[in-house]
Amino acid sequence: MEISNGHPDALTMLEITKSYPGVEALRKVSFSVKESEIHSLVGENGAGKSTLMRIAAGEVQPDEGQIHFKGKKVVIRQPSDSQRLGVGFIHQELNLIPELSIVENIFLGHLIVNDFGILDWGLMKKRAHELFDQLGVEISPSARVSSLGMAQRQLVEIAKALSLEATFLIMDEPTSALSIEEINRLFVIIQRLRNAGVAVVFITHHLKEIFDIADRVSVLRDGVLVGVRDVAELKESELVQMMIGHSLNRPEIHTVQKEKVTVLNVDDLNANSKLKHITFSLYSQEILGIAGLMGSGRTELLRAIFGIDQIESGSIKMNGRKIHIRSPKDAIRLGIGLAPEDRKNQGLVSMLSLTVNITFPFVQRFLSILGIDFKEEKKTVEYLVKELSIKTPSLSQTVDNLSGGNKQKVVLAKWLGCHTQVYLLDEPTQGIDVGAKEMIFEIVEKLAAAGSSIIVISSDIEELTRVSDRIIVLYKGGIYGEFQRKDFNVENIMLCAMGKQQ
Image 1 (cartoon, rainbow, N blue to C red):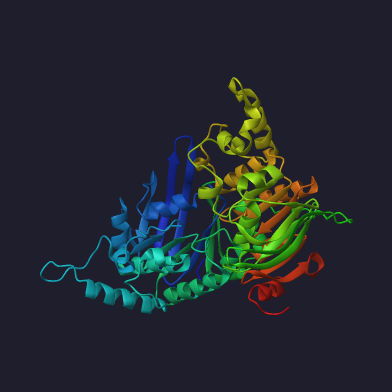
Image 2 (cartoon, rainbow, N blue to C red):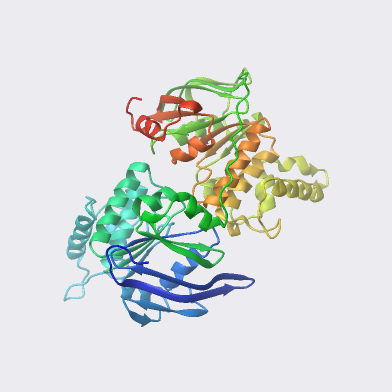
């Protein structure tokens, strides 16, 4: 389908097929992106998005198919081939060296030398300034990457690609670690690049972002291209159906018990020199949402309750009794479990098996004088895997090889196995596809219906209104507002998170 600008194709991939042992990752996929276009590539985890783009970037070789770049057939055998063609690939896990300066990172691999063969740092810094001017931002090329926030590191990656004269940018989940304000600024820059003639492939799990930024969208499902649509002519429900093959059946959310029973009471809590006078209650079978911009203190609040960060003053009561949580071990003993935002590095041991990850907090249950009762451990893990519908070829599978949604289920499984009463979930659906998100929501709702109480943090306010019974809003380390379910309004919650009165 032609978009309104009528530009020719920057990249055309014809009938691309790629198989791995036992898996057909792509089957005769044809995909094209026009010059001066923002083209979103979407699909559930395992749909083939990354494989297709890694082929375009020369990181993976196709079994069959052709690639045309600006109308000419090309063979891309390695990343340097794609870079020479003007392709820049910005991965979700940024490829920067924190210990080096920004200018060193931008020109790493293609350093500029003068006529005497000496590195011309002056010219490189000048060009780095020009690149940042092109992006409309002010960043010192001399600063170390380690001193930058995630949003600025994204901009360094973009500048790095532009330094190679990239006219085709692939951006894989570029907003996954950004705040709402940072995402908006990034979108302005992406639109500026499009207006300058750059073609952009934008991969995201956030459907709203597709409608905010993209001109067209291509949908992959199980390695097959199921459709290409003009975003202006598409509804979200249609896009979801293309992605998962059926419409979403969103069940009614459970309701909190009419008689509110307080499970957790936080009173005048101060911690991390960031949290200020935090007071709230969590009720039995309640899903309490926490909204707020990045830096508002959301994560710090859960870390303090879980005993990772020390509380400076204030108190916490659980089931009416004052408790002292000095470490995560205390929290686990009391029936509190934390699913951290960074599940890869903080919630799981990626290179160990699914079984070890699940039973790690309660492995002592299977200990005897003869060692671990592996039969009983296996029985417990099998039950939890079935209960949470974790997709895995075996219980010995390393967690690193599971999809994002299944990794999140493993994190929940270990706390379910601990008979957890209070779940602290920090961005539980970050980086997972729409189908997996719905499954996580269903699990959370079932946990609450079965008697647990749950606190959920999400940067996606629509997600919070979808799953929460009540939402409190943090701003600059304090509670700035509270919304009951009957009063949920995304715009009002957003304004509250920005420090504006309701």
